[in-house]
Image 1 (cartoon, helix red, strand yellow):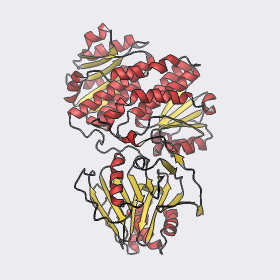
Image 2 (cartoon, rainbow, N blue to C red; image 1 turned 90 degrees about the vertical axis):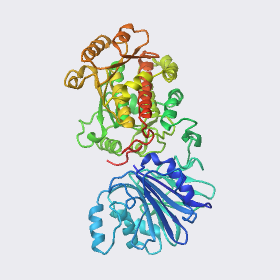
Image 3 (cartoon, rainbow, N blue to C red; image 1 turned 135 degrees about the vertical axis):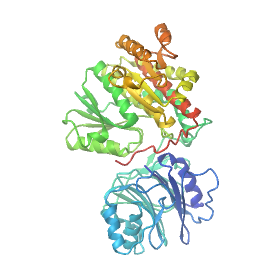
Image 4 (cartoon, helix red, strand yellow; image 1 turned 180 degrees about the horizontal axis):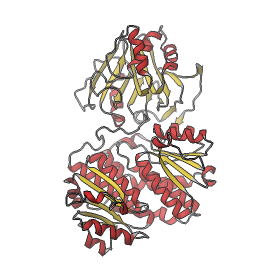
Length: 579
């Protein structure tokens, strides 16, 4: 979940690496650091976020550098635990994303052999192991060390006297950028896009050497060829574009994201594993799990296909009996829990499908078939447009199974998102801003939308929020309802409308403030609600999309009113590449 970035070329490397780290700081922002290779290796690192100014790289001379922005797993966030880490001689530097699971045993052995450690991290053992193996060839040293490491890693290394960056990958993403007498290595494509869109995605077990002119890739000690890809994303896609936060920009991107995703998906052939699916299991985490729940409701209601949704981290240890298609969903395509769940499904001979946003990601290499979300790069830690893109994929799949019955709805649904973006949520924001606890409720496919709304609120505002199927509130949570505990309820027309209104009235009787999302002409709901928010469209697809966007905006504006760090919420990182 950390970010790594390396550069070798003709410019001052440390300056370029610092700017690259800013672009991947969403992967971790507990601390940061840079190692630059000149006549010697010089390192500068510190706790905290990268400052806009006041971090001088001019004493880090050289045209080769590696950098790191950290999300702590081993050792508290402080200066000594910040990467890069060096060996006892100070002549080898390492940055690392992932977890070395056997680091404690390796560290004891190294201490027994006289090594002195200066941090509490698992990463530092790599530097000391390289120190023992290094005999003037950094590539040979890393190839000797890697078999001793258990766990996940994306590693960049430097050594005095060796002008190369040596990179290695296992179960953690690492991509190379091919420029004009310039080479890059990073944990994702974002910091490279400013310079080149020619990329190579390394595979598990790959080791690569980078000089300004040449990339060489090795696998199991032998040279390997990896396809170069031209990435369609542009540098403008990762700029704020005048918005105060990336999250707000990405919320406003959603009408185009949904429409573009539907158009792109229609041009792709539906994988055979989907057409032949009699039963479906979906594995996912967080926001992707909520999108999967929406799909389950729609798949069973509209297509009569049995579906179950499993939390990916639980699936690995408590898998259901293997049967039917297993779908893994991950925005990055690098979510460790989802990767492991799909690997287990393949071991049990289940057909597998990956739904991802990350081109060339690990999940696509594991699955039998893949579908892209077409969301473009998402920078804010809190997922918004990737959730909408996931819904687009699922709506598209249901539409195919219904022989195109949703075609018109899919073509026009983006308009409901556009209208939702124009709503005034000021009174609802005021109500939520002063609360310590919030409930979000819905029924049917709107229940997972309520879950997602609660997740967004707690992620970026730090207000405790819970999502419930509305009928469950009376089975315990009613005890928490009070005039200080607002409820956000989604009440759209449909089979559960009547019982949902009854649920809302029960909550009203407990004195709780009610923020209700409903059909704009629904007078009954307007009379019950303390604050009524009209859905631009309550039609099934458009209703789900507009409710989603309203809850995203409610969380955003509440967090903004509280002065939160919206794009970088505390303790969180964008891509969860550790178990």
